[in-house]
Length: 236
Image (cartoon, rainbow, N blue to C red):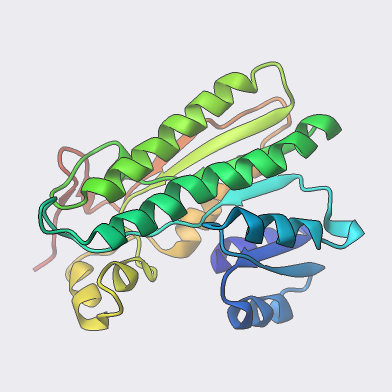
C-alpha cells in the first residue's frame, strides 16, 4: 500500500489511507505531499469499514478509485495439518473484506458516473503450488470476482482491473511465517523478486489510461519465475 500511495501522490491524487495500524498510516500521510486522510479500519469487520467511511471528511467522500490491497497468506501446510484459524483469517481478509469494501464504495461510483476498482489478486489464484491451498483459492476468488464485476460494469463508466503479481519481496513472507524473518528471507534467496514499487507501477498504469480504456487483467512475475506450478529459477 505504501508504494502505491507514494506513486499515486506523485500523480496528484488525494488519498484515503485505510488499514488497521494507525501509527503506520499517520507516518505515511506525513510524508505525502498531497491531501491525505487516515481511515483506521479492519476490513474483516463490516461495522469498522462503515464507521471509517461515515467519518470521511466532505472533501474525501467522493471516492474515484478503490484499491483493494488488503490480503495475506498465513502458513504453508498440508490441508490436514493447516491451522483453521489461519484459513479463517485469509478468507475474512482476502475475500470478505474485498467484497465488503467493493459493495459499499461501488454505489457512489455508479451514481457519479465515474470510478475505478483495482483488485490485487495473485498468480497463485491461477497456478497452484503445494501447501498454498486456501490462500490460492482465496486469490482465485478475487480473480473471478473481478471478472464478474467487470462484466456487470459493461456499458458503465466504472472500470475494473485485476492485478496478479508473482513473487514480490514485501512483508508477505514474514506474515506467512508469523514473523519469522529468517525463514521469510530464505524465500527470496538467489532470486530477484518483484518489488512493491513494481506492483504499484502496474496500478498506476492501469489508472492513467484514457477513460474509454479498461485494463481488465495484469499478470506480472519476475523473470526468474514462470507458471506451470510456479517455477522459480534460483541463481548460483
